[in-house]
Length: 243
Image 1 (cartoon, rainbow, N blue to C red):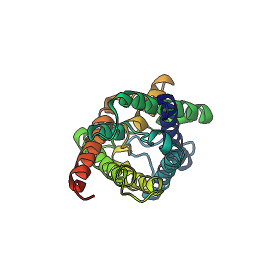
Image 2: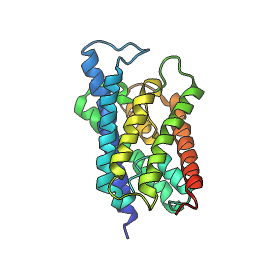
Image 3: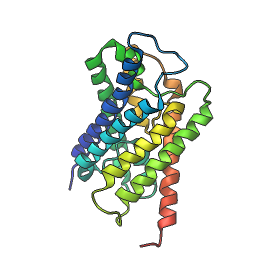
């Protein structure tokens, strides 16, 4: 039996990989695009091709984390997934809080370490933090995040939770679902589908004197958790009795 300590480390490391490489790719891409110029506050200047490249990094980082740590912790790396699995009785109540804490810790360490590697320009570019784009309303952003997370959670249920799934494909399919989801929604909400992915850069910015974006944080909690819950319950209902 795997100890909760090992699970905590696995969840922290998996979320660390996601934020360091994924959010880090956002910062690096913007540095390449702008050079020494100051970004337009209403557009971060990233094309669809740029977003695809960034989100492939997100997907690959998640895939690596899943293949490395799924046997230890189940490889959630996302509070929304943890909550949804608990809600459909696929995850024990006693582990919910430790998992979420681990995910938030891993995300925060990733943002702080990335800032240490890149320096003040990373903080100037908000450590790759997510925020709704100009003209996108609060409610709209929540819905977009919910729909984006819905796709991710369906993939999790189908290839990682369902015992009938073909072994060995979880990392690949879940990683691709993240890439697909984020490529669509990134130019609307910044693309999170994961409260921890947003929390790490937000806290990093706060600790390092960067932008204060906390007013937007509920978007990236409510939307992903709602989307994950709906997906988990729908998958469970539709597939019940099909064994």
